[in-house]
Image 1 (cartoon, rainbow, N blue to C red):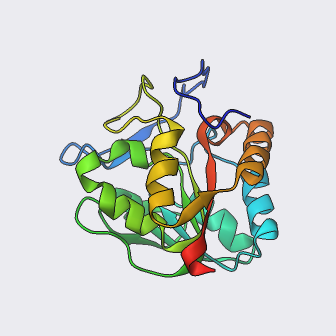
Image 2: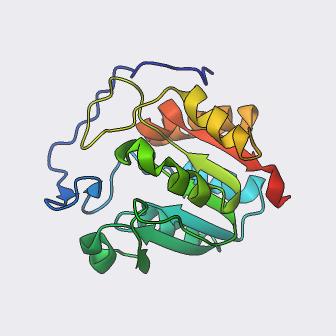
Length: 207
């Protein structure tokens, strides 16, 4: 599978009837679907990760209204859900902490960090906060926006190598086989963002 994809694939996601949560004051916040996004719902991939890496604790960065955090919790994982938009925090289906990554990084220690459809919304000047937050986990799973990808407040669209290089500089390494496997599982779930750009890293400093 191509971990070096540099252009957005031809997606045909049908968002009719799906209402986003937006912030007029802070454009980098929100953009998530109010009642969960079918194109980020990836139960097969998450089950694989919990089993594969014996995950007992997790940080969900940009957790939106909490559906992924709730799913992980039901798999027996203790989850810290974090989102920067107050409306999401107040209406989430899973208890969520309010935190804006443009102000400071998250500081915690967990087995697993999950960050889906977040990093492309945060300007590169805040990259240090993003990377430090990702490195709270032993295992990191993220998606990212590709150059040319349309969407709400896309301000840091990069090829995979950009994220691989930055995380390698922080002592992490791409797990190529696990990346391939969760992309295949995400495809079965219809989770197009995980299917196209998911990356799995081991944070060697925490092992």
